[in-house]
Each structure stands twice: as structure tokens, then as C-alpha cells.
Image 1 (cartoon, rainbow, N blue to C red):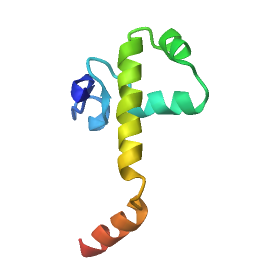
Image 2 (image 1 turned 120 degrees about the vertical axis):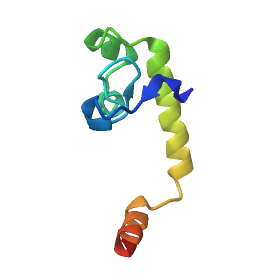
Image 3 (image 1 turned 90 degrees about the vertical axis):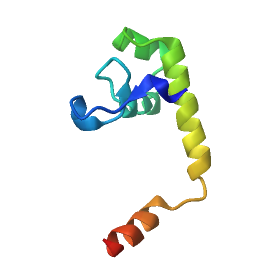
Image 4 (image 1 turned 135 degrees about the horizontal axis):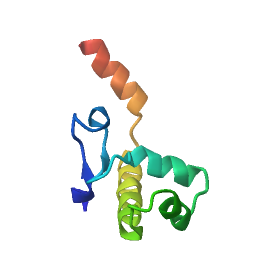
Length: 83
């Protein structure tokens, strides 16, 4: 499932993008938060497929569920204080 995402320091400074594109994964979620439909996203970014977008959404949902009980801000503060 995650094989549609790549991180390459030569592409957008290593930010996760849809494999084979320069489209950041965060952009997909940003567009969804702005109430774009999958069809709207494809209209704006025709190199993306419905299956890619659905897979990215499923990955995001899994992350969201797994992070539900974790306070990342608190965790980062603790870890950065030990650096």
C-alpha cells in the first residue's frame, strides 16, 4: 500500500510525495480539508488516479487511528529536551 509514496531528497526536499510525481501527500489532505472531492482533485492534478487518492486516504486514516491516543507535541518536547 505504501509503495505509492516516496521520499527523495531531490524532490521537494525529501517530503513524502505521490510516487513518480512532485505532488506532496500533505496537499491531498489539505485539498480534502477544503472539501475537494476526489473528482475535483483529479481535475486539478490529472496525473493522479482515483485509486492513488483512495489509498492515500486509507493510509491517513490508519495513521489517524494509530495516533489517536498519542500527544505528539508532548512527545516531541520530551525528546527534544533530551537532545
